[in-house]
Image (tube, rainbow, N blue to C red; front, side, top):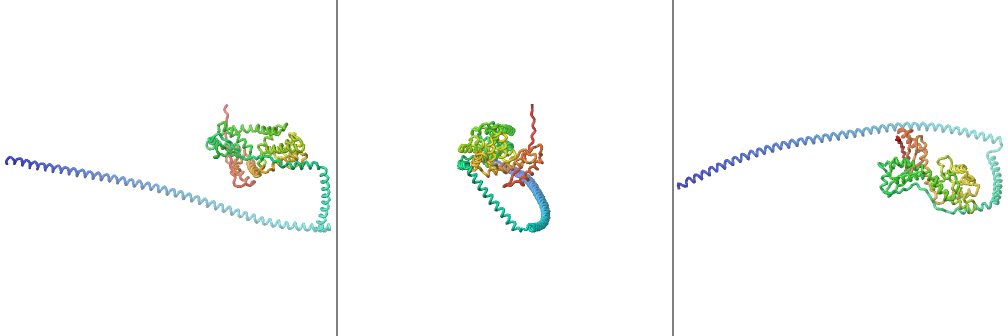
Amino acid sequence: MNQMLPSILLIIVGFAIGFVVVFVINSLREANTARKIEKMLQNAKKEADSYKRDSILEVKEESHRLKLETEKEIKEKKNELKEQEERILQRENNIDKRDELYQKRESALDEREQKLTERGKQIQEEQNKVDEIKKQQLDILEKVSGYSREKAKEQVMANVKEAMQREIALYMSEQEEEARLTAGAKAREMIVSAMQRYAADIANDQTVTVVTLPSEDMKGRIIGREGRNIRTLEAITGVDLIIDDTPEAVVLSSFDPYRREIARVTLETLIKDGRIHPTRIEEVYDKICKDMKDKTIEYGNNTLFELGITKMAPELIELVGKLHFRTSYGQNALQHSKEVAELAGLLAGEVGEDVNLAKRAGLLHDIGKAIDHEIEGSHVDIGKDLAKKYHEHDTVINAIASHHGDTKATTVISVLVAIADALSASRPGARNDSLENYIQRLTQLEEVGNGIEGVDKTYAMQAGRELRVIVKPEEIDDLKAHQVAREIKEKIEETMKYPGTIKITVVRETRAQEEAK
């Protein structure tokens, strides 16, 4: 028993010490936890303050930004209102000026009307005086002659009636005698008239030419960068280039066949060459213009060969070739002349006349049309003068002079040429009046521009809706170019009648060139 007591005491002391140790440890842990919590609270408070400061700064920045934007919008609105106010004031000033101008014009019209009224009264008074003087003179004449007006009128009518009856009787007698003497010639003319039922193919000229392209990519090269190539082509040739969705094709539009042909050959040469730029376009165009004379002579020689005509002056052959580039009411002039020559030759063979001479007269009957736009006068007078100049046969000269009835036909061949001309022109569809009127209007438009001093070339384009005027830069400056445009506009309005509007574009281009050697 005594041995167990120390053990129990030791156990009790151990429990007490353990309790104390546990208590101390728990106390330390609680103190440490409290410090951590306090530290965490302090950190949370600091973070909250930081967030609060950041939020306040963001709100202030946003508020400042909104304020600036609002002020900017207000300033823009004020500027807009100010501009509107200025425009309104300007408009009011213009209206006031226009009103003042109208008032002045109305006053001027009233004054002119008053003057016209007074002038009318004066004219009426003068007319009354003249009537009174005429009446007095008639009364004096009646007293002197012893005839009244009615009696004198009856006497004059009786004399005229008697004279006319004698002339009619004499005319009828002469015509009967002439009919007996010319019965054979009249019979041949009746036979020739019956031959007018002959018909041939219709050949009309159009206002467009289609150029075939090797590929679709060529359209872009023809247009060029920012359209400079197509603008150059249209400016130097005076022809519209229409590039649309038609595959591998470009349409050339112009009322002048000569321009269209030059533009066609120029474009085809550029396509084959492959180099398409403004300088090359001008070089090719100049060369083609020089080559057109040889081509014109070729057309004339081919025509003479087809008709079997020989020994013609070289100048006349060139003029015959030029007819290929002229039209009459939409009918190609050279084709028309060839057809008249063929018909005149056939008719001459039927009536026993010289076939070759008839063909020659038929071919040259419209030769004046080759240069009637260069020389003053009708194509009949021009053609007659040309035939005399190059020593053509008298029958050919008379056929040219008489084919429109301006001069009496002195030979049967002249009559045959007139009949062949009427036959070629009067067949249904052979000619187009509206196309000829359209061409005349465009030609007149170009003449208006060419009549202005300082103008180099004028081209009517876009079916007459645009007039492109190229001026001489050494004579016309930029300011004068605007004056030229206005002068042409006023002249067109005064001298022409046209539907819609016409755009007038004046082009002035200055180039400096030097040649290094």
